[in-house]
Amino acid sequence: MAKVEIGGCFVECIGKLVYLRYAMDHPTESGKWGIPGGKLEEGESLTEGALREIFEETSIRVSKANYVGHLFIRKRGVVEYIFHMFHIQVTEAKVRLSNEHTDYRWLTAEEVKQLSIVGGGKEALQWFLERK
Image (tube, rainbow, N blue to C red; front, side, top):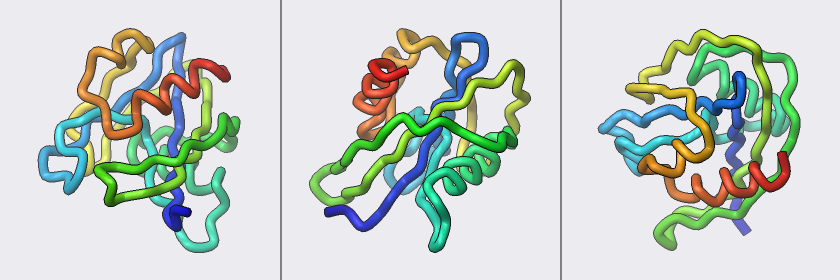
């Protein structure tokens, strides 16, 4: 079983989801697109971690998020983790990127499917859409 847990959030505004593009110097996902998220810190709850990551990566501050579920993800047979997914809806949001990312877009699910997505990202999006 994976020892690493990741919290990610589908941030939705007027029917579109925010996706972030990783910087080209990212160790595993350079240039790929994904939702805001990252590794949970020691002593942090799933929700606290997801909310922290949303803020760190987008500057969007929210006080709660709805838990969608989790997936077990294995990348290239080397990295394994549990990806906990959350969903928030906002009526407006100004995104300011962290230095981990170079771009962002508000996209429909169909538009997301046309991008180069992080490993496990298409499965996570499908899981989210089926439970939304």
